[in-house]
Structure formats: structure tokens, C-alpha cells
Amino acid sequence: MSQTATVAVTGGNGQVGRGVIRELNAHGYRTVNVSRGRRSEAVADAYQQADLLDAGEVYGALAACAADAVVHLGMRPRPDDAPGHVTFESNVMTTYHVLEACENLDIDSVAIASSMSALGAGFDPDQVRLDYLPVDETHPVDPRDPYALGKRVLEVTADGVGRRNDGPTTVATVRFPMAMDDEQIEEVLVDGDRSLDAIREAPFHHSAHNTLFAYVHLDDLARLFRLCVEADFDGHETVWAAAADTTVDLPTNELVAEEYPEADVRVEPEGFDEYGSLVDTTKAGELLGWTPEKSWRD
Image (cartoon, rainbow, N blue to C red; front, side, top):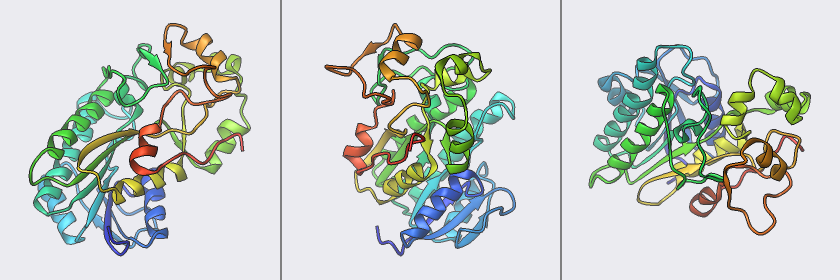
């Protein structure tokens, strides 16, 4: 794709959206923030207001900005601020409208925000169910709560549209844990007590356990979405994104023994790197040339 191309970023008002827009701008793309509310960022080249749950408004917005590619982030970022059906609808129907509009407007490249929750992790009140570690794209998924179900359904939708003869050529869905910028990493990880004992005593232990003590730096995630836009594979692919290390100040082999003793460890022969992530991002590296570069330990 030409770097003079126009990329529409839905949900560009959000933290990840702003990061993606900055990354695209830095590489010469023209960017358009497509969002429901009033504009609350000053980095996109243009702004287009649209309710992404309205198919007509999605078509109109993408046509008006003459998009060559779309990064779809404009969904509810978490499930606890709305009823379950509202969260599910946001994840699924906005994705369907964007993909159908892209098909009919001949927009060939689409990257979509899925979530670590598609695994069955994250916000579910039950423990995450793991067959093996580190998890990769072939690990069984077990979504149960409305947010996780919506994310998994949007992946299935992307897969179906990616198989259409006239659908977008390249569709990527990205699963990622919490995305953090420098300030958040400094406050939460660098200045916080990241011992396992401290995390276990904190109210967020269940969430941290269920999301495999994973995180990703916002800059790395934004770069991955740009690489998805630039990719030339055919059809739909799901990739994982995560930092190369965990959020815990404990060697990963010990962390697994303490927190996930029943999981089959598939790292040979000596186990994980010292603080190695429990998320395998090999596919993103092989398919897109992406590797995480930033760590809170730096």
C-alpha cells in the first residue's frame, strides 16, 4: 500500500486509536478519525463523525473519507460500563458493518481490534482455562462473558468475510492484553510492587492471573496495526500481541509453577526465558515482521 494512502481509524478518540493515528502519520499516511462522539484528539488529518452501529453511517463515513484501509477500534473497550447485550452488539455489529462497507467500497485492507478476552481470559469471573503455555493462535478458545463472546464472534465474522470472493483482500484481527503508554507503565509497573505476593494481595489479582500477567506497550501495538494495514496476505488471520515479558518481578518458570501448575509447558528444553511472556507472538513475527521492542524493565 502506498504511504500516501488514506487510513480510516474508527475509535480514534481512544488511547489505542490516538496511538495508531500517530504511528500512521509518522509513516506518511493520511489519517481520518471515524468516531461517534465529538472529536477529542488533535493528531488525525481529518475527522468523520459516525455511529458505527448504523450501517448507513459507516458506509457514508468510509466513502466520504475515501479510505484505502481501515483500522477498526471503535468498540466498547470494556464490559463493565454497559449491559451485556450492548457490549456484545458493539463488538459484533460494528465489525460486520465495517467489513461489509469495505467490501462494497473496494477497501482491501482491514485490521480489527480483537482482545485477549477471546481466549476466555480477562473479565470472566471464572478462572481462565489453559491447555498449554505459552498460548498461541492455535490454543482452544473458551469465551463466556458478553465481551469475550463478542470478540470471538468478530473473529469468526472476519474469517467469513475474508473468504468471500469480493471481500477485502487482507483482514487481520489482533488479540492483545492491556495496552500501556510510558506514563502508565511508570506508575503501575515501575513504581509499583510487582512481586507475586503483592499482586496476590491486590484486588486485581484475578484479572492479572486471567490475562496471564501480560501487557503490551502502546507504541508496539500501534506499530503492529500499521504492519497489518501494510500486509499482503490473502484472507483473514488472527495474531497475538504482547510484550516479551510479564508484569511480575518473578522468573516465569516460577510464576507458572505458582499460578498455572496444571498447564502443559511447551518451551523446551530449559523452559521460559527469565521473565518471558506467557503469550507466544511468533506468528506476528513470521507473518508481519513484528516483534515487541519495549519492556517496563528497561
